[in-house]
Length: 155
Image 1: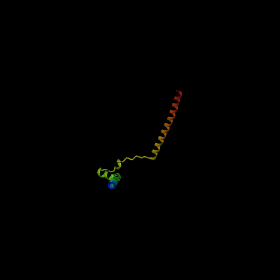
Image 2: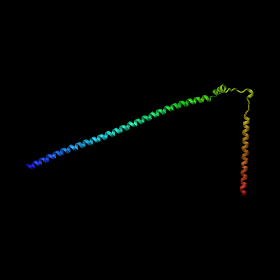
Image 3: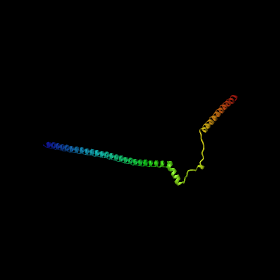
Image 4: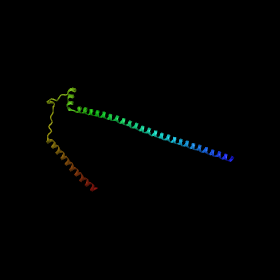
């Protein structure tokens, strides 16, 4: 009987250790699952924060683009205003009015005007003279070439 009691106690101890091991394994599995869940939620939170930061960056870029577009529009308006102002300054009637009003300009009288006649004949004569000069230069160049050849032949 003593042996039976010892065997019974051994069996009970083995049963207790199996139960304890089972509970211990279950608690380790729970800890691992909680750790995995924590890591997964940490990674998901990191991804969400990264996405939010990128959206904030995109929004900032859109704001900068809009700001630059308004500056471009303002500069284009200023450019158009300056072009209009330049055209008014270049207008001969306005220049004449300003010269008369501010500088006291008056048109010259008949005896102050000097007329120079420039006819078609004078232009034609100038062209003929230029052609004759070119012909003379051609003759001189040819003569110089002949003389240079003679000198080279003698040497």
